[in-house]
Image (cartoon, rainbow, N blue to C red; front, side, top):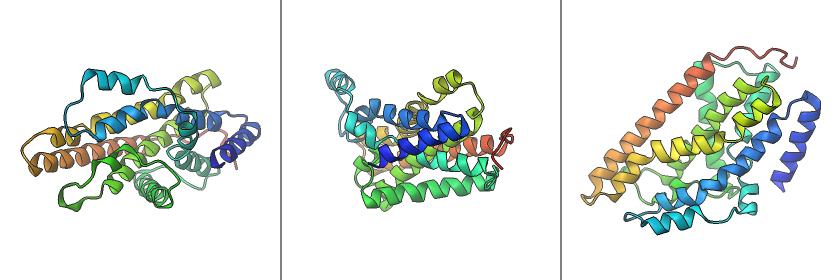
Length: 233
């Protein structure tokens, strides 16, 4: 119901602003579930998977209901910030960017607490070194995806519609691959090594470091964002 309501709002904004970005963003959120089974397999591994297991997971059918639930948790925060920017209620900058990232983390934690989204793959990790919460790691990673989408939405708002569609539709998939696949790789490798807690600790440290690096890069991009021509007064 939340997804259908947001699609209605997105269509209304399309008519009001003559811009389909919001509908494209929700559709992109749905497409992000294409690799969800694969990420869940990786984050639940205790031993190396067989090739047949990976092929079976990648060939699983597209789940329409799961995709509907995934349309907005990562994309909605970015769309809200875009609206604030268009109405000149928010200005891009380094500190304001970090502030909205912190808000995105809080939003993801709230969704998890209320049970309004399927937990992001890192929740499957179980106990982490030094009692670091897997739920917090999942929120940090999901918020990083929203943060990246925020920068993309700010950048492509005045693109032509075909260019906007080509840019936006694959972005949640690409950011998911970056965050869950590349940033999370040290932690996933550390969990598969047989030498106890230290590989996991080093993997967690490296994952958090890579995540911080991604946030810094996105923040730098947001702080250099030029004002959108024709912003709503």
